[in-house]
Length: 291
Image (tube, rainbow, N blue to C red; front, top):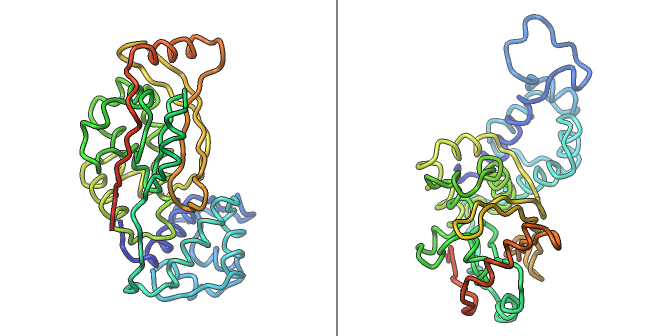
């Protein structure tokens, strides 16, 4: 992971430019095209900026585009609303001095949230901005494995799914890893120099070719719900829906993630069976990524 926010902005623009076909924006492909996607000068023309200005942006130089220029680039690159927000976030981070120190506080799970976890009958986690598992109720622990046996930095949703053998318990592991990597990309955009972001991305990139390839794609997602399949050693396969809810005042910050099954379904029956098979200690909370 590059610790220069300007480089993050440059790489995002380049990754998106090389994915767009000329015909997608009304240009002729031409027989002599040697680059994948659009040329820099084509994006500059479509956005109404000079080729030199856009080239300096993709080179990670000290260019501070206005909101109007960012919107023009988003239109030229056919960005979705989600991608446009990400572009503005990256540009805002790039405008800050690289050497400016930022005050960062550890992600803390409030006592009231821990009490809420105790009342939840569904598997429920509190996940931090970098996908660290900060707290969980007993049923979530039984569903995902013995989290307390792991060192705190390893209690991370991406880290868990990139370990050998994860395919055996998560049949859709590869797709989920792609989704989580895109979510992490989105989360770190506003503060790419966060120590936990640098530590986590650096470790995963060194140890996982899969993650390194996905990280280089610069995909982003702001997913708040989805579906997960788990093959559990005690109750068999479970297909569960999950929903994420941001804690009050935390943006970005911890989210409550709850897993549920459709009522009166086989998945619901298996989940109830798992609940009967486990003990019910209090939920656990561990600060991760303090700086």
